[in-house]
Amino acid sequence: MLMKTESEQQTGSQYPESNTFSKQDGVVRKSLVVGCGAYLPENIVTNDDLAQRIDTSDAWIRKRTGIRQRHIAADGELTSDLAAAACKPALESAGVDPEEVDLIVLATSTPDNTFPATATRVQAMLGITRAAAFDVQAVCSGFVYALSVADNMVRLGQANTALVVGAEVFSRILDWEDRGTCVLFGDGAGALVLKSGISEAGANGRGILSTHLFADGTHYDSLYVDGGPGTTGQAGFLRMAGQEVYRHAVHNMAEAVEIALEANELNLPDIDLLVPHQANIRIIESIGRRLSVDSDKVVATVGSQANTSAATIPLALTHAVENGRVKSGDLIAMTALGGGFTWGSSLIRW
Ligand code: ACO
Image (tube, rainbow, N blue to C red):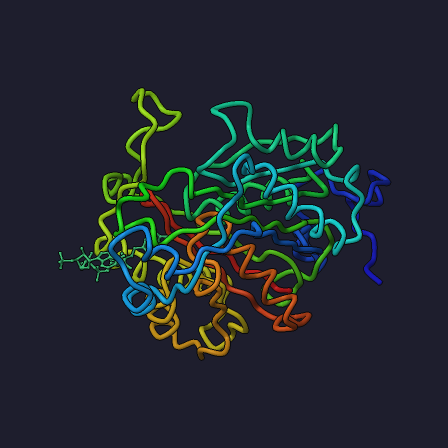
């Protein structure tokens, strides 16, 4: 049982007026991950299915990417539908009533419309009427960015119960004639529920330990959509310099984890589970090797789900939780890189 801090005693509130408890008390206010959920559209498209439409093969795709199949949203199924379908089991697993949610941060590059934020439609679908709700756009790093925003708001006392969602319908921004890109992606959504809580200070206390975000816009042209709801006046499809992305992905994602560990005075062997962005099995394995993390501690869902951009991390984490790979006290390292380039990492003590 934690003693009430001076701040709590003065305000009579469970929450401090300042952003954290004094570390001298041995406790701080952190975001605790209390639930997670995932949703994948029913329709599965295999590599062989694609090979009937474009000049590719199951062997080529598997060898270069590890991808066997991807889920593709049905006609009329939108990012908000996928997001809400992931939020429902996340809230259920957390035992949180939707009315308790006071913040929704949704990471997507494929919003339903230019505005309002897709997060507001998800909010309405969940029957929530009082939360703050907005989208974050950092492509495949979007979930780490969204988590960072939500974590900071929770730790500062601006929110107590947050839904952090990654949801994408990338199938709508793919050039299905471009075999170099269309085979790589799929649709899906994942969500985490955060709750504010008083936790032991330092890296041993439960909760989100840190988030680190980076961007370098000089790589804008390496991975982008040549149109869309921007100001170019055309619909647009995803364009990518694959090898350029590959090189930066391995280096930047691994380095982001190293920076996070150092900031928390932790070491590589402390990692219990590595949940990297799921772009390509070769990238995932290279990051694992560079960080000397055993392959049984690396979550890989790219084979059955392909790259769902902002949704890959919450999808992979939910998959790991549902398969009993996460236990209380585990140190989970997450890292992603996406268009921009943007990249980042987060450490969670489960
Ligand atoms: N099927 C068959 N052949 C193909 C396909 C395909 N789907 N796609 C490309 N090829 C061909 C090319 O046309 C080329 O043929 P050519 O030699 O006759 O010109 C040949 O294969 C080699 O093409 P490369 O582009 O050089 O292939 P590479 O070995 O680089 O692999 C890949 C391509 C898989 C995209 C790789 O660069 C990669 O994994 N990059 C990382 C990109 C990524 O994962 N992006 C996801 C978004 S970003 C992110 O999430 C981090």
